[in-house]
Image 1 (tube, rainbow, N blue to C red):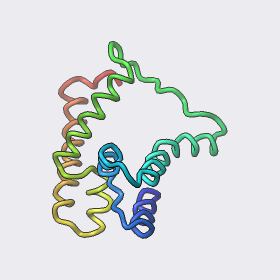
Image 2 (cartoon, helix red, strand yellow):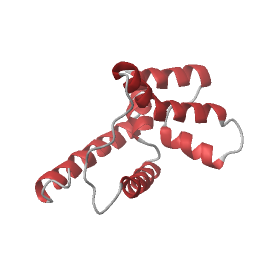
Image 3 (cartoon, rainbow, N blue to C red):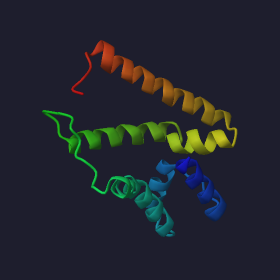
Length: 136
């Protein structure tokens, strides 16, 4: 609900679609009006820690997954590259298509969201049942 509310507010206040890949792309490749993009991304990144600290009174716990021989940094870079590549290939990310595009009744966003979901289902099936469950 919060993502939908944030997307709606961004559209009402700034007249912008809340596609995170587009926001990041414009932040990296444009010179003006970066303040709202930085604030939006900071809210996305910092809100889980703030909510966790507010409700539990502690910081976010460290992940307990053993990723040897890879570390969290390597996996985050690889995952970020793959998500960025997929978002670029689909002309938008899951937030742009799944939240904003579906709300606008876009057929292109419906197809993209179905493909995102099918890819996720297939990945989980392959990792858990074909590759033996992975390190987690």
